[in-house]
Image (tube, rainbow, N blue to C red):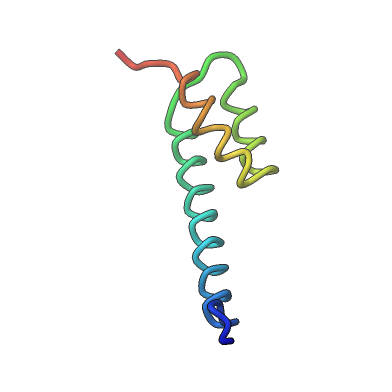
Length: 72
């Protein structure tokens, strides 16, 4: 029986996952730095995203974007 996932495919998948997580991290940091937050929320989100990259980015997208101040 032949393996469905060869080492080459696994390496490519790992590289794609790593690249996507880096892009997500950068996009979240740019979004945090471009927008205004109340009190020290901006600093807190930057620290969370930098020190807990994948989970922090996902948390920012789910929770932090709602806490941004609206520019009207």
